[in-house]
Length: 72
Image (cartoon, rainbow, N blue to C red; front, side, top):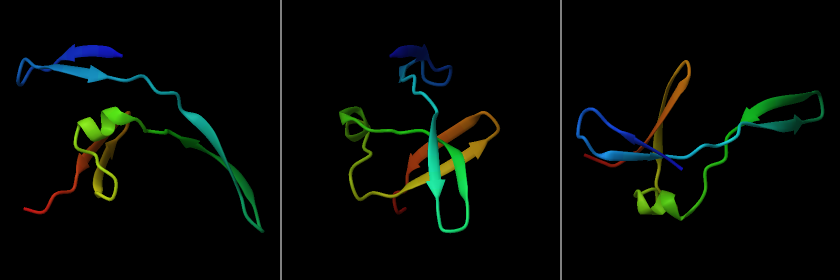
């Protein structure tokens, strides 16, 4: 686990290092290998990512942001 200080709030943000793994997909017509990142653990529920909730996924080159999709 790596800790970073965020500029906006001066709070320590914890970071996890994950490995991008190959995911082998096969159907009747073709085979392919795509990248996969697995997220699991108690730390997700500690951050509010509970089972059954939906998440919004924002992405730009080199960055993925996950946010809990909560109604306004």
